[in-house]
Image 1 (cartoon, helix red, strand yellow):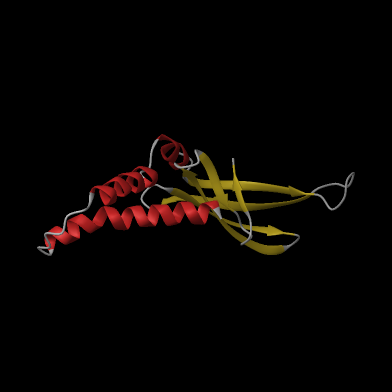
Image 2: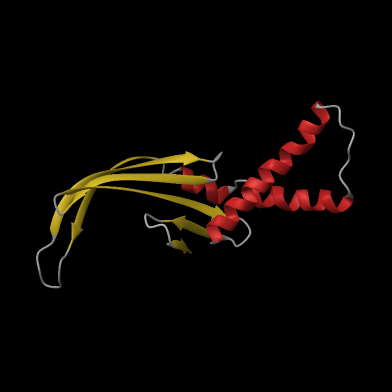
Length: 136
């Protein structure tokens, strides 16, 4: 939910930051009210990538994975291999990770998005399952 709100804020900020330029190009002399200008500044600040986003971007790349999982305590692990590809998306706001691997002899693919919420001051990750949102 937080990621959805964060992405909503980012999307709104991007749309609002473009509105004055589009209006000027169209010859529209409409000016923002002081309240609208204050809201625009808040949205822009909330949606602007900063140092935490740059730290995330530094993790972009391709990684070889060695995966170990256990069926039960005390049993030997099952081992498999895979690849994770991390790329920066949404103009530096998130890192998208795509994983391809095998688990229990079957192909596995997964994707997650990790970002930083400027409003809450927390990192958030949308994991491979649709209903899971982590923040720390």
